[in-house]
Length: 174
Image 1: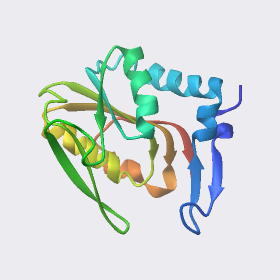
Image 2: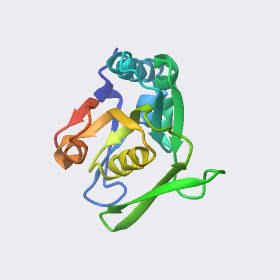
Image 3: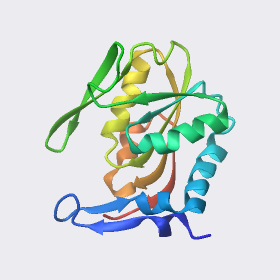
Image 4: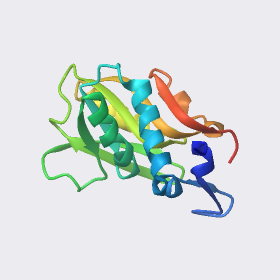
């Protein structure tokens, strides 16, 4: 089996010039690579005691749901505004050029529940930090944050320093 990093396509100048984009669609197309990605996340978190797994739309869902199933936890989606049908709570965070917002149902995480956060990519850490803040504002206890890819050169892990962060593939330059 190829290393997971060999299954991730590097696309230069996307979404804008000077950016090297790490494309997981090629990893997802490879049945063994997809299976190994999920299995490695599960192996790391199988005894973490999570009650629920929270993931951010949309690529986070790809990994979050199978991890939740394998570790015996529920699944909670965190979405962009206007996508959830019930009452929501939101968190807004800074981007390079503006702000963005994520939201979840107000009853998605119960006070005291142990929550595992899963996403496909850790870059600057802003999105995941906002999601963790949102979960904690509902009384959830973050027990870990897992990623398929981490862009070490963007130092996103620093924003998540109070959490147990685990990534499968690391890139040290963009």
